[in-house]
Image 1 (tube, rainbow, N blue to C red):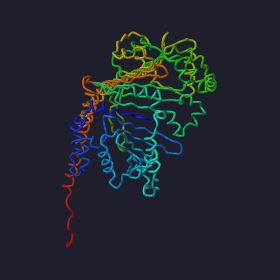
Image 2: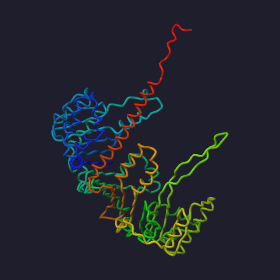
Image 3: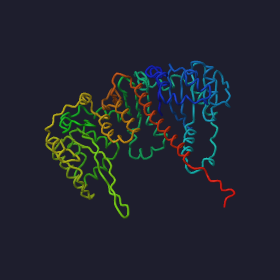
Image 4: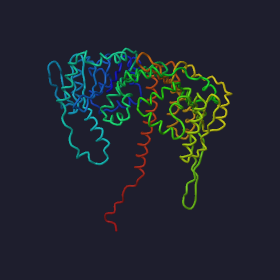
Length: 532
């Protein structure tokens, strides 16, 4: 159902264990004198576990017929004796048993670990993990009456043995798409098999009725995550069945309409979605689901059909958020004999939705249908303004903002436009601008102010580009940029988490100190023995 590969060698090169050991939260966690010696040894150097952290780790979930499914962790062994002792420490009551050339051990009756001198595998039943998770959040008080978990160690041991004897031509390694994923340079690789996940969820009934299975067949997503200097980069690829892949190749979009972006009447843009698509593809997509007849029947009642929708649109859409700020407002609270006002801050911004007009007569049919539908619903929303010129139709929450946009007098040059060139789907989010506005609200809360200041020093913006077709894959890329462009992003995240941990530890210490002070202020009970 999914596979996650951790390139532990590159990860520990970018963030060393010594880097982690220097953090405040780690020092506090390891200051406990009651910690067992083996745990202290492990925290001093994780390789004392016997695991080879140069070899990478693989975590995956599978579901075989007749089972609840298994979650598996695999890796390489550096020292066989140390690894065996490490697992004995995890469950001192467990005994290592030999099964051929494998060492095997059952942990707490819920997982089985098997290893030899080269590699190891941990296998846990998905059903057992789910039952344990559910019991932790069971507020009905029935935990003690729940039936005990069935001992699945025999079945889990069999899974371990099958993994060690798995032939390479029967493994996922032979899948070209998976091999392509592992060939990408990165720190984390992820493989998500949406079709298998849906099959295991038992939710395919409605999907089949609506013919949505065309979207799920052979639906696989792959992700390569790299922690680079100043940014986190995620390379995405999506795969589908032949029918849907052929559709995407035929109807994929092209370059976005830059004129619809540069005429946004504001320099203070915090978010933009811009995309280009082939309108005729919408009609064909609806046909794939088998809902074209139903939709034509409904739209015909309000004055248009799918052909009108296709002709009305040119294939360009822009959504923008600008001029974000906090606005002071108040609410009156009835106190019985009097009223009081509660003053608070709420977010305020301009939003814009714009589409490029194709055939004007067909587009007018859509406008008339929209008016008819909103009229039937009794809608009278004065917070929404809409208008159009010869090229675009736009909706906004402010009339003056809409008027300026439709007039097209602005000719702004945004930095993010360089990233948008050549991609059918584009997203930009300015995290730093949003945080800068929110930071003003934290002045009266020292803890929140410290966290906000740390956030302002870290987060910059996000770019998402997608929609190209490369062979049989739909490609995309997500880039999360930091303010400091010279330091590795993993090191920066480590420092950021430590700053938050310092605030939380200081808060916890203050609360503990206040509780001790309060307990000293409570007078002892009076001794009333012998008194009347």
